[in-house]
Image (cartoon, rainbow, N blue to C red; front, side, top):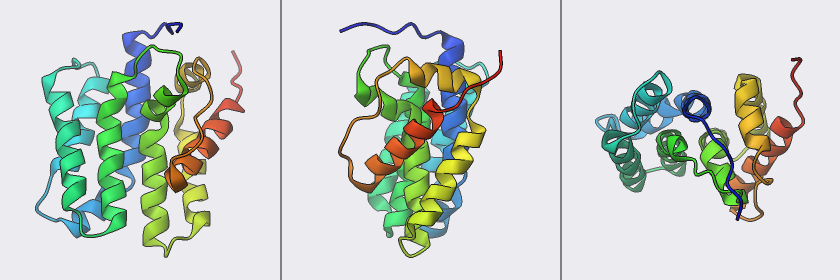
Length: 178
């Protein structure tokens, strides 16, 4: 299996993109679980890394805590929002392996956020498509470049997998002037 070269700056930009995607739906979790700050803490830790902090124990712990928070959610939308936050913190741990499964480290927060928004809107797929479009507009040239170094998103994964593949295809179709 080949390795992909990833700089710390690449990881920071991917993490910033993921944090931005997750922030959009944090309020869904907080409305469901108002006393639980674990998903917000995960997004904050992602931002800390993106802005120059280190990848360390705290970042891993906040991602794990957001995952546990998802299990406490009363609604599916809140659970997806917590998963988006977990994915934002986990984006810092994108592995340099040329495997399609690594794409979820880049796009998971955006896909989970889109799914959370769909669920709040009575499972309206146009709402998820709108969030995917917004995520595409947030992507920097570096995020797109990093994504293009990996194989396309894998099949499977239910609706979140579909949203991941939509986001993947839309981002890969972008070109930026040099």
